[in-house]
Length: 210
Image 1 (spheres, rainbow, N blue to C red):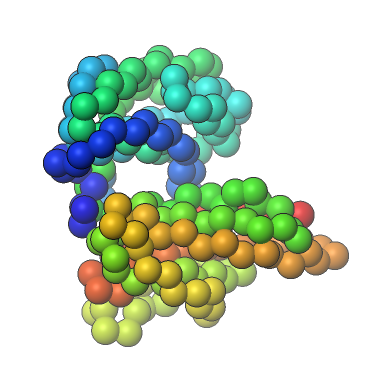
Image 2 (cartoon, rainbow, N blue to C red):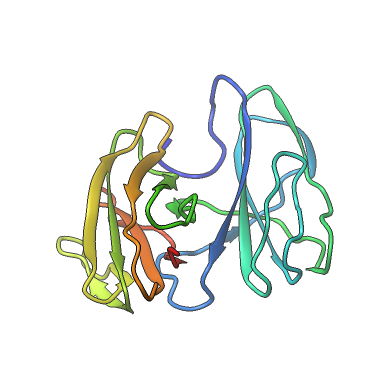
């Protein structure tokens, strides 16, 4: 699956997760508005998003997804062939309630879980080309660093460091497990992933490991 959008897939599982995008400096992110059905059967991979202004609101019938107040949040609702899903109205003050977008052609980097120092944290990228190489990068500062061999494409990091290169699986998911070291004064770290073969860049994720 080399893009996020309608695709013919065999078995069905429903997975819900939240990706919080920073409000500034998100490069290569161009949502395409569309309106999938609110409930029912589907053979598509939908990415549904809205603005949520209440901390701790739960949005989905599958799993508990909790938001950061004031952020624009996109939730991945994976609906494969033969399965049903239900979009809940959520709680709190979603604005409005909720608009739905089908997002296509982007890499999605999830917030590492758990985000704690000294134990294994797992980073996951969705929407990659199956079996492609995904480069996980990080930096302590925002900036724009153009990628070699990808004219006009940049990561939102200043002096990015390569954490590791991971091969995506057949479903276009790349996972990296790392132990982030503890420090006396934890500082936010910015993470971003890129797919070298397509010059696609993920959303940046900011995390502090304490």
